[in-house]
Length: 258
Image (tube, rainbow, N blue to C red; front, side):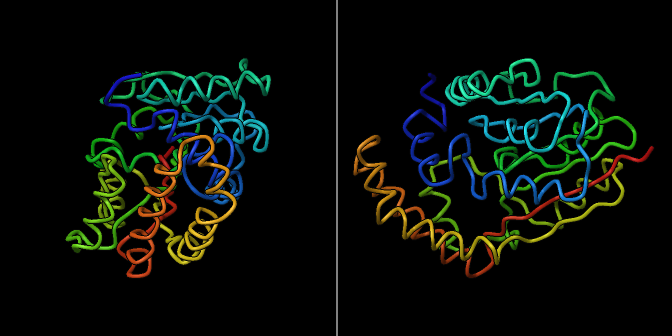
């Protein structure tokens, strides 16, 4: 494990206690399904940018019938965890997990039917370069389907800055207009951004209550009470910026013409 890993085993265990096995962001398989919507993934080749702890890719295959999923991440701890879950599910023939360095996607043009991402591209500050790369590796007619954590305005308040600092992660948050501009300039059509702020405002309150209750007590036995208390502090800072709309989880979609 690198000293620079943002998701060490202790944090993976903490987030799984809140969000479910294999998930490092809220909503679990149900939110994956909402991002996919009416799109048919049956037999499709899917690239998952920021595959995390493995739950997303398992859902893409088991629930949505993806033919083969290539999951990318930049950190060893999450990939090790994900590989264990994929192997336990018997899905190694249909899910490949790859460690990559930040930068261009290591695939030829027109490789994938779908590029998917769940709450991971928050860690990639340059949305325009990212969208150009997503466009490049998609087949003509392919879809970009994602959720991410957005900001409501380009200028953040002291409360938002305090929350981001408490997270201690390399958040590169952008507004919906910036995402839409990046998708359009990359060449995408049928672009869309759908706010999930109202949903997560309520969900985050439930999560905080669970952290202060049974879930937190169970997690403390694994990760220590100090780490649980640290996360209670993060959630307590997050809820006000969800209420203000500065923190805005959002679904994104765009189609490559063809």
